[in-house]
Image 1 (cartoon, rainbow, N blue to C red):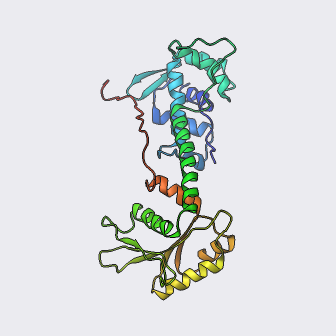
Image 2: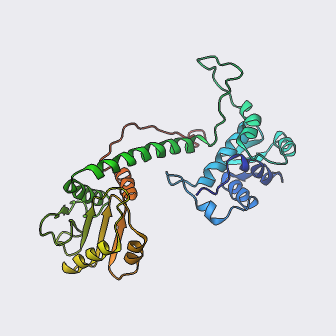
Image 3: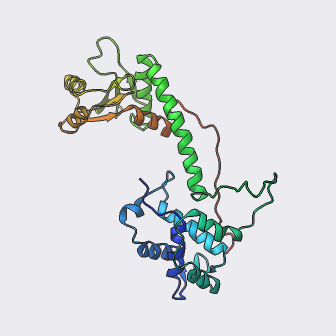
Length: 301
């Protein structure tokens, strides 16, 4: 759940923290604005898919806009102060900016835009961007990844059980289990003892993680009894931990049981499995790469 306010909400607080006439760094401006907005720790801790702070990103986009508008001026590397125009804007918009349409109407005219290749009529207004460009990119990538993940899960559910068992072992190896030598393999089949794969955590196989893989259709969730059987299989091979992966999901009783026993068992359902395949590039490939650039401050100093 996103709790960080939209970037227009940061505009007035950014101006207000500079209202005393002092020069402040970008970091100081952000922190002071967060305090004025009473952002809680959860909001300040939110991150984008890239790992960057969502609050920092949105505050930065607000700073970019007010600087482009001439409401603040850069007086040194990464340091700003309020301008006369900014003070006038702060008074003119004392109620702040609380939606994209208002912010766009006031701030968009300060941005130079190229002539469109195709002329549009006055009624064909361009849509107002709901988020800053970085979040637009990440949102689009997340949407594409979700579609690929859903298709991957459908393919896994339709695949042969042996293929599914091999696939889950490959996912765990891609995650780094089994070391650089990829010490892991499928052992499913007749007489497998209730486990479908094993990952050696060291070269001699002294530390092992056992895997159970159940290729079930959507809605055919794994129950407590199946988890209990896996625990018994782990005990049979003298193991204290394992990973149970299914293409469906787990019942509440199964999850509660796994969390309440001494044996360490990680449960991975179909949705998480598909997400891990995307993250660690198992069964998928990079289709297109885009680069996002930012200003090199060192170059201009």
